[in-house]
Image 1 (cartoon, rainbow, N blue to C red):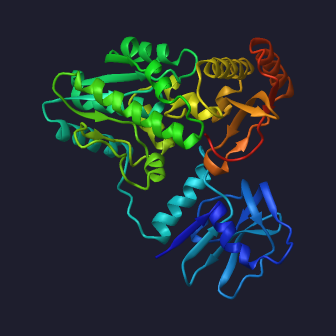
Image 2 (cartoon, one colour; image 1 turned 90 degrees about the vertical axis):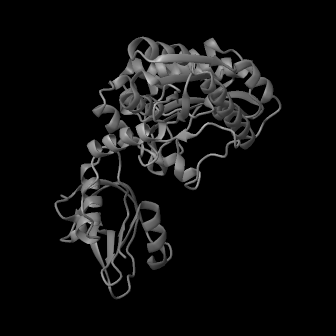
Length: 400
């Protein structure tokens, strides 16, 4: 069976063939591709490369791409093993072509899956699961839950209802924007439930991130179940669970009490960019399609220690100031995710700013203009006197 290793996986595999203290190429470099099935119709050009070195390759392995004179891709044709020291980025047509070449020319796959077919099958699947009943669409205002709700309405019409749980952990204005969007712009039957007081009470004393995730996720899920049961004829709850969520859960659904309503996860096969394409085909605008990811437990995931009303107020203010400055500079759409975190540094309250370009482990810290950072720092220190330090995080990878 052919295998394709990308980025960190390819680097780890090839490291055994690198001489001790070998110089490596890491970062954006011009990659030259040789004639090879994997790179058919892929032109030479700049790609983000990591760990390219002068390997001492065994017989049977050959170099099929180079970056600054060092191997950037290697193939072992006898074992049908392909290694590329780069990853496929968002909006990366050459990377997509590489994946298509691997799937079709090397693995012999026949293309049959299309977005149109996915939408049709998903709508039919929701109808079959619900019958003549209704569904409660658990919405957060984010891309995934919005696309799932629109698919449910395509399937069931007015029998698709929206349920929104206000956790008190949202960014400034998010709860109001979410209600306005679904109720006024989309015309959904919309029910909002505020559990902010009870959730903060339940989370008191919880200082570790694992404890906060466990408690908040359990309480939010229970609130959605309670809210859904108030809808006449409800048969199931629709969640915007995506493929990345399923991978984090090991491919299994979330654990719920036995008497819980069934949960439908129509997007569980799709990654974020695919969800975005479905949303575009369903007619959603840039306001939703370009929305940045946000943790399901909200700002609780972006502060150290216990979650308190005072800390939430500080973090909301800092986050809003940072995003305002990004919008004013015109950089917001060039960044995949940006946010503020609240921490303690040297015993003093600190705000940590984070902005990323790219996704997942391949994401890199955005190189923001110094004047933008200075304006943000000035605003935060003026609006939140308790904050003594404002830092910018250059660590690559991750979107927490």
